[in-house]
Image 1: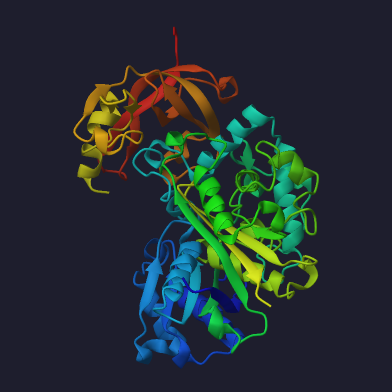
Image 2: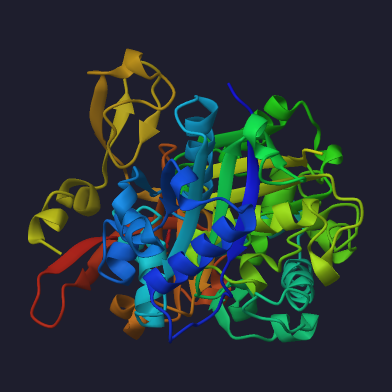
Length: 389
Length: 135
């Protein structure tokens, strides 16, 4: 298998972007990444798009051809692929593109992730998000997406004594990081009290425990590592990738306080990279709800099972703490355009490893990790990146 | 949503029909064609089993931000329930104050209206749960 490197990254600002359409966002991110990679469009072999649900959000399917078309690539007749996998679709698209290059079939692939969520109302958007859970045996009975995560939080509190303050400290930390990210949806710090006093969504989770609905897109250019030097002095290498699935419905899982898909995907990625969690300095993990980040840092073995809450409150995962987690602000503060998530996480890690993260730069970052979930954890994807110079 | 989508699930939603693997004895709800533990060995050996409708709350939440369908019911309690046969399911808890719900609460199934397809659409029914009067 050939090594694969990231040679270019781009992203739009994230937020409620009323004046921009799905195609505007996809094209902006893609063109920024192509410019950053300094490649000519003739050098692109394929386009992969992570998108969760354009069919429901904007009534448009077949978005892979659409994005390539409006990026000015129609005349090149490139193969285009749209990947679906709930919130993990962008991360799966990255893995599929990596494999396509590793196989030798392609040399350069542009991977985009995009979602336009605000063309529908917020109640409808929440219902679309919940369609990544089990519609027939969860949603139909009234279980919302937030409700399912809330039930994980309740069980985690019951088994490990996790407190609402500890959950809230995830939101406080990620807003603090988001305040340093000029592309973030929320560039504003919040207090622990503000999180604790926010209106309840699904007990014990309040509004500020939840990531927002967002519009946005991100893109990366992947290249066979042996050709990457032609384009950049700091190629960022894929060192390991792991993907795993689990029971679709939360109630069927082995343990409500552990996402086995994350555990397995993390082990697979670390095994390929021949690394341990302690070798990672910076990570972007799925934090669609505060409890999700707690579970992620435990299941990826950054901290012991059950210790995610106290560790977060103690600053273990703060910027330039023991592990810098969600330096972009995460889904919570950077924003959560679902299809863009996995790709945007990779963009942040690449910026960190290139030492281009500005005010939120992690000192001495050499290796970074992304962790992305689909649904309530029925899919998990982990990628590990390293500076290639 | 088309009526057959609800009609197909009547067996399980009305009568709590699941399956029991005759290879290992594990009970699944809703029915499965393949046992998650036994795989190929279970094919053709999954027997229909009606759950007794008794179980225990494993975790729960009180939903304040509800889908349009459930707007009139909020706040309402959702729970994951472990049935006495071992299978788990997700259901609404009724006839109980949110503050009285606890992990470990014993509950029994009951038959209720779940929702309706718009003003004049088909009404669909299924299980909800309420605190057990006796175990």
